[in-house]
Image (cartoon, rainbow, N blue to C red; front, side, top):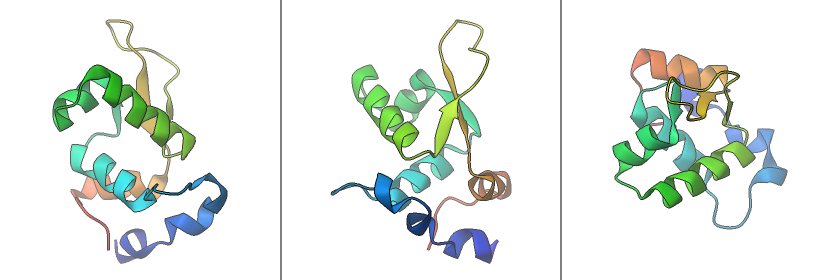
Length: 100
């Protein structure tokens, strides 16, 4: 667990990190939801965001390669997004809400 929390995520994808983008903040957002897969409505409802803002956040997480589109949509035909990184999935499974 200590390895997952202290891992240097930024060094994996420095070219994807732009000015003002805090990769760790995006990871914490995913951890706090405690879901390994979610749709835009679930994300927006959890963080009390408008649908447009929720889509913008999800697009940013897609660009950072933290999540990916699932192969199958949800029952109501909305796209589902899955967490990519196995370290993040491990922390979600263990109930971790923050990284150091």
